[in-house]
Length: 326
Image 1 (cartoon, rainbow, N blue to C red):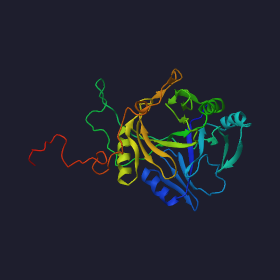
Image 2: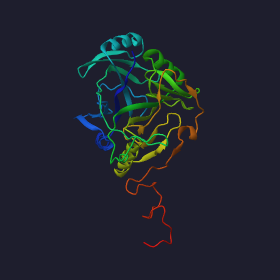
Image 3: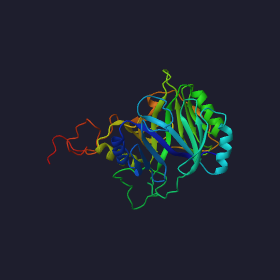
Image 4: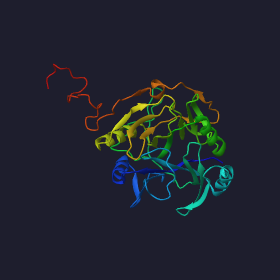
């Protein structure tokens, strides 16, 4: 028995029309819409719900302004739901209800966030991904690597929260849902995956000296590094602001590109994270710029010139010299 991953997230925002354009530009499909809520889907059916701040029934917010209000994790079966319900029945905010025709259980984590579980509604998808040629292996023969004009995210891969007490939150997710620590910033951060075998992290908990609570970012999985670039360039052309990227994380090996999100926090395209098993031993890192990013582009890349924003390209090839004739 283990949690399979994120099935749905719910944002609250003070600008639904802006968020509608944002998430459609991001590459999600608008699956449903009402006066106070929009439902977007990734390729595998993972959902991102964006609701008006005043919508009745939303879980309490853990910070002011637009933010993430709820994370719904998927499990394999109704029997799993029964076992998890027994594990969290005594926790604050316990709920056991029918939502959209299906049973959903949950409670409130130590950081005040609404945590829910349901039998997963995600579907299997078959997508083509880039094959990488290396010095030792050349599996890509007589074909070029893909170029993406935009991204179509496969799923919500992980969420990152600022928490007031990282040890309490890590213990909660480990004891209630069986999450496993992948790596840590001692007394500052915990990277956790849903099961012993899986991607590097589904959840990252980060404690700041100020004790701030809130959303840091939501990360959407794309096929490969080329889709990180193609998606980021398209999103840049749409006028959305880069926070940092593209770049690469040393801790998880993943390539990333972060943008500012009007629905709260940051949003990330990422690909090529490490895959871990039960044999993996969690490491400890001291947080710092080179731990967060092996390399990263400040301000992002301009979607039209395909070069770093704010840097004059001049329309020349990099091999041209100033004295060369046209």
